[in-house]
Length: 479
Image 1 (cartoon, rainbow, N blue to C red):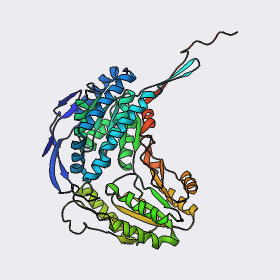
Image 2 (image 1 turned 180 degrees about the vertical axis):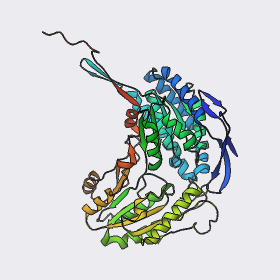
Image 3 (image 1 turned 45 degrees about the vertical axis):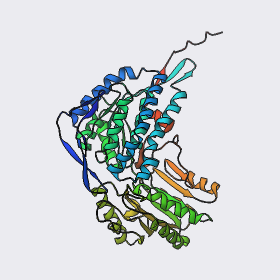
Image 4 (image 1 turned 60 degrees about the vertical axis):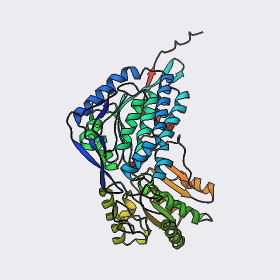
């Protein structure tokens, strides 16, 4: 049983101002496996003040000093790799293979990427008599989700450290173990006191004061669009910068060519990864209506091969994260059935042989229309909707017919044609034929999928203010 009843503030583990606790459940067993303290506005104020105090000196450190700190963090992160993988599996149900192959390594990737970018990043630009300077924005608050917990912590923390900012992190209270270990990593790495602070808690108790605190200069939030709107409202009164990575309902357009079957199979497999709990998952597959039957056959075959079970075993999918998520997904699957979509495989209830744990059947619907609930709402589970299109123009129109714009996908044996389709999709990131894995590629969304960009050098700019120093160099005397 894990007990994390202290917060990390100003380089020390400190007692909360008032001890209230929350039980943490293992979604595979439905058993309580840990307990965390819940912070409040007073705890947030302590952490923000510590970050504000530390900013005075940390913001003035050299590139070399920050590179050294990032290197130490990366080294300590690598030492705790196994602990992090175990924590992610326990707290949110990711299969151990996924935790070790992706969930934990992606955090290492963000740290290593930040190191490489910082080595040559230009913080000053000489424009004749004027010097354009990029300076750290200040104290940042980070509110992160449970689905890729380390990815979303480190893709914020690494560029913030690199640019000279200080910060307060609130990891998800649903999956807080990896966030706790990350704070231990920061302490072991000797990050100066106050530069990194961490408070456990929920949205009302910690998220609201973090996003509204007058001494916070920037809030970076990852989560649902509904919650993101509230964060923006809370931040508005103090006119702080708000960066958000929110929901998605990403289209996956499979073109009518010889690569069709391969594209459908790839789309199903990608959709099911992490039990469908990814904001950029390709949840809407668009196929030519004339090939709908073929798509159904391939999708059924692919989904039937996806194993679900104990995340500590050899299963490809573990449970979804909580009872709340399980119930939501079940209701949306039932909505798909009630609204007349063709249930290809899966459906409501747990998979056969699993009577405990929040396991969801890999589910595929076909003959979905874009006005159906399962085509409009973000399900956040292993549920795929296949829609038909008559023409490529119609496919693009349907693909863009969503309030979201985080990601999109194109599958085709004709690369040039795929590129043209990608150019017309209104999304922050478009993947062609399974392309991915670029840690320097900007990640973020159009429309109600958020604002700002994370990852790589684009993330650095989110944490920097721009200053113009006029008369920095004297004007040349007239000849």
